[in-house]
Length: 198
Image 1: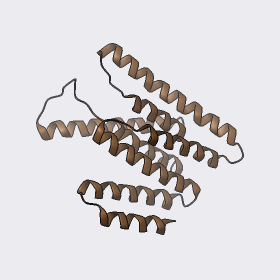
Image 2: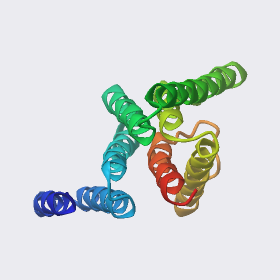
Image 3: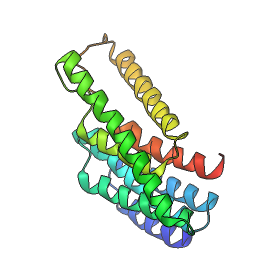
Image 4: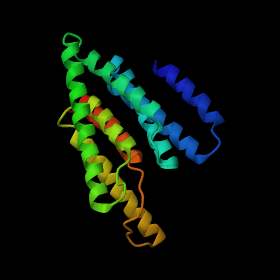
């Protein structure tokens, strides 16, 4: 399977035209390879699929400030498949637990969205981020979901600070940052940590 992925990636790299395209393809190849090398089984293959979807979400959100529902739905379906494979003897319980985590995390983000709008009078979190939180809940255990959110938040803050420093601008309350750009890869990183370290 790894040989098939590397052949596909090398063919795609030869047709990539820009530095951005090459960077995206390298990120895809590296994350798929990491998933399959660290977990050389069906779980690793599904994790490779998660990596592809999360990078696609990050790229689209960075370019258009939107998280496509199709990619979110695919990640949810893959997450439920992952839950079922992980607990082959208790499939219904694993699916129910994944659904509960997803619903709780999505509700938490939705609550934050509503609260921010009431306090500030404008949107602070998009609905795509709320749905992506649901994906994180399906894929990640209770203890790993906050870690992924923290990774994403710290990465977003660091990127924002670097952008301000490089352009010598001051902090503005109206500045926008595509959170999915950071949250989507953090979900895959959280899954990888959860599956291999914790």
